[in-house]
Length: 285
Length: 323
Image (tube, each protein chain N blue to C red):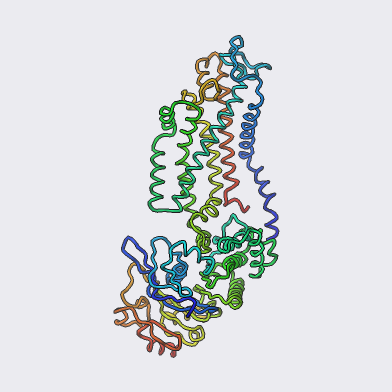
């Protein structure tokens, strides 16, 4: 028993490095966060300053990734755009988690009509393709960063509601829930103390994946002009503006495209890696 | 007045084919400091009886009759009142000590939980009490064990942790649902010894649900034998060891490995959806006659405190003499 107790921590550390995907994902995600943080205090140039004498310059020591058709520094725009992507991702996932997880936990704990109602509501939201409903919402509320966040957040709710309900129902059938009831605990206490901690790993993994999807969705909405509005830079709108110059200066599309790919890939690898790491079936080895 | 008085306890499950009476007319009384063994094969209603006493029946199952603890009717209490009672006055331990503990919490915290819930004990005091309880169920090195997670313990250690958790608030009644079934034979004996010791020490009552006749015979003061959801025989252990009145109990004893014969009872437990109107054991009973199918046999007195539900008790006594 003592040998097992003392093996716990180093074993987990070794496992982290066995998963190269998790390491790559963590590095890419950390890099994304770092770039966004740095851009808050410093960028090579202003991300919004227009200088028509410096248009469409190729990459150089002065402009690391060149300039766009208004003479803005692409590296600076990408850095500031990372802020935007992260903000959208965090807030949209937070909305989805807060509403979806509560709904799912309630459904699993109550059963009966409450469960039916919550799940049919989730089905209803699911029935509309995510991007279409986001377009609908931004069309109703008007384009802009805040409204696109709300739209993406709403489409996250049923994802978390269903996942939470399914996982929580499985936990509710376990013996330790019966034991907790035999110890005199009520539904709310059992949900918060026993059910939620036991499904947390699944939710964390899903949150990273939804984070990546939210970044992608925001880029999509910005691309069609419903997301972040000018002059604040956004990766999706940079792609849109690059269209006109696709043959003249393909790098205008390539760099923001690469940024989106790196962010989404990093978060997905992180999510997959975390799933392997937190899987209870692997925990004991 | 006995601590626990159970009268005409029944459990009904609503199924698509109509209501199923999975437990019928179970009655017994249990004094403080006494141990009642409930035996029967799988599907006999042992666990349902235990869950009904705790008010923990699965959704769709209803309890009928009367369960009084210290004179208080439990079956009419609402969920809130039951929550206050469970883990405080009545506690339960389970068959699978692995899955009955939360895998994500240190065991010390899980033992402290009932104290914090029912006694409103501050965290530090509850943690100290949890360590004392670990020592009380004879676990070595309680200080370190309290910080261990369930998967770091052996099966026997986990069951001791479960017992410590159940004992936390000093319950009047402990319901143990097959507490030793998942354990090694040597560990089984230790756990049963511990339970007996704790009953003697605290004066609580214990209901020991088991399919292990030998374990119950060594541990309990009296035995209740269930078959197909009904009581077939109820007797003090000593009387039961001398004489089995009911043909089913006789068959159960003959099927013990200790006899060296391993005589199985032919047939299987009755289908709960198609229960016969008469004696539920009739189709497997070597002594069955046509009258057995007429109606449920009444519990007849065989000796002091010894009752059996059979209309062929004389014939059964004769075969018991012969064998």
